[in-house]
Amino acid sequence: MDYVAIVTSLALLQAFYFAVKVGQQRVKQGVHAPATSGHPEFDRAFRVHQNTLEQLIVVIPSMWIFAVYWPPELAAGLGALFIIARQIYRGAYIGDPAKRSAGFGIGALATGILLFGSLIGAVMALI
Amino acid sequence: MDYVAIVTSLALLQAFYFAVKVGQQRVKQGVHAPATSGHPEFDRAFRVHQNTLEQLIVVIPSMWIFAVYWPPELAAGLGALFIIARQIYRGAYIGDPAKRSAGFGIGALATGILLFGSLIGAVMALI
Amino acid sequence: MDYVAIVTSLALLQAFYFAVKVGQQRVKQGVHAPATSGHPEFDRAFRVHQNTLEQLIVVIPSMWIFAVYWPPELAAGLGALFIIARQIYRGAYIGDPAKRSAGFGIGALATGILLFGSLIGAVMALI
Image (cartoon, rainbow over all chains, first blue to last red; front, side, top):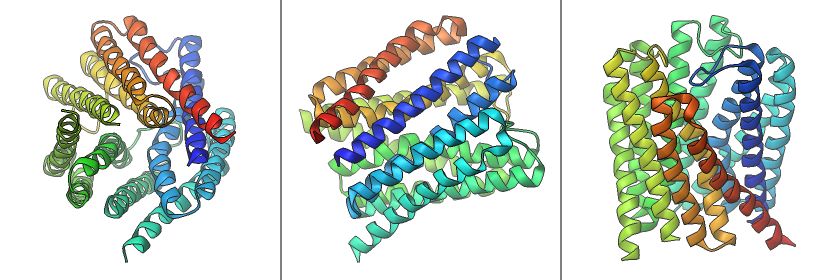
């Protein structure tokens, strides 16, 4: 499970990094708390971070459950794919939110496999 | 713990489904990213998804800790009750946000039992 | 791991308490769902809750992974520091969002140690 632990830590570090970028935009664009919008660049950085957290709520438990029923290396590999997809997503979104689909889609594919794999694995273990 | 794994997967699938509904509303109502409001129907779908994620951050770790100290089947049953409550919550909220209380309350009850049960179980194991 | 379970439960209870405070402000200030802003006091309570959830997404998995590779008591202690920091953060933020830095910073320090400790621990276990 060490690989799954490493990928989890890296995914959380990525979210931490996205949060730092939001904080930088908050200062740079003068968007004062508790506001969560006010400048297009801030808004993009904010949404990238929020959307990544939304995904992590699903990805992390799925990856660990998947790793119980299927090879942990496969779980970690799909988690790594998710991280790469999120980096692509951020790069595209910051430039133009309308171009976020590819990065989003690859990440959602990895998430979907982890999610359905977890469910199928757990059901198969019971029956 | 297979039951807890299945219920976790189903709860995450439900959140994934709620996210898909947000995406559909985004397209249908022409609410373009990074905006997160702009049309009443979009706003409702968005808040249902967000609120469900907020709950999952508490429910999933609680359910697994609960399952260590109490029968896992009870943990899974409370998790299943949470999922049903969220479906009721969504159905009511989409029609009229003011009617969300019943679904919200049943879900919060399940969450509360999992949460306090986890704390009590872990404290009792120490002393 | 009982200490880590207790600290996790307490952190989730704190988030649950922050959510109750948001609900109270929602009623008191007449901010009706699906709105998530509309009155300064509501907005502050809302952001404190949201930001705490954002942090928990990172803190909880990190604390558990950290506890696998380092003494669980240290993981639990850092988690407890996070909870205290979040209480300081809330107290400051409600009064004046510009004063949130100290509470935020102490919490982020605890999170950072848990996060990097997890990554380093898991990598060292592999090599």
